[in-house]
Image 1 (cartoon, rainbow, N blue to C red):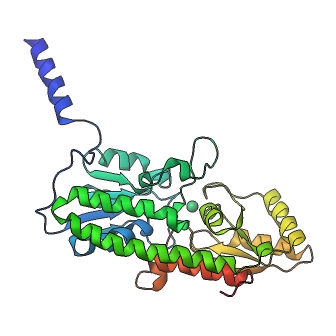
Image 2 (tube, protein in one colour):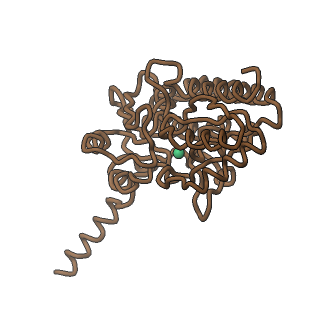
Length: 311
Ligand SMILES: [Zn+2]
């Protein structure tokens, strides 16, 4: 008798499925008035809004200036995640401090890492078995993540899949044009000046896609502080190669890059601060920079102007 009870519990547990909810076992949301989507970074929220249109209510947890590498979910965030129908996040350890909560809630909610839409062979290896998570700055590569958003919403809400596909097609066409724009503006920058010096290695994909050498002062995450030795080494390099401008980032304190500028001056060369780049967060909501397309365009224009392109 006792064995039977244990067996029953075992079978019931297996049948209920204790792994994360996958697209093959998800609840059909077609009858809902709207789908509640919660995302981490703004770039994903933007894609979900554009593709979801009137079918979705999107909440992005990380607003302007927020560093996703350090972000911890608040109690309010946990409540939002628990109420969500669909949770979309970056993955590749971008949201390093949210891994546990995403995994826990992912057992009960449809949760999708949008970078799963990008072939692993196209990713930049960032040391060890880790990939560089800053995929959104190669616009063509990011379209893989956008397709993942489209496919996740269409699978969760199949009755409205044609709408998701139609809106995604428009958005993807816009991204193709943006990719071409970034490429042609970058090609107008003198070859020797195509160097991006900035505080953390957020621009590896941008550099690879649009032809820049990228030199970051910090590692792949903002968790580690740059040492004085790194500042000296970078100042030597900027002064000797006469790199015209270095950049600050919206989600990183500017003091590090200002220290580099000072050190370059003490070597008899004046390097400009070429402006502020968006790295891991978009600009304010309601402004052009508060969209993915506007954010990328801001960076392309800031970089190409400061480095001697037509801008
Ligand atoms: Zn970053």
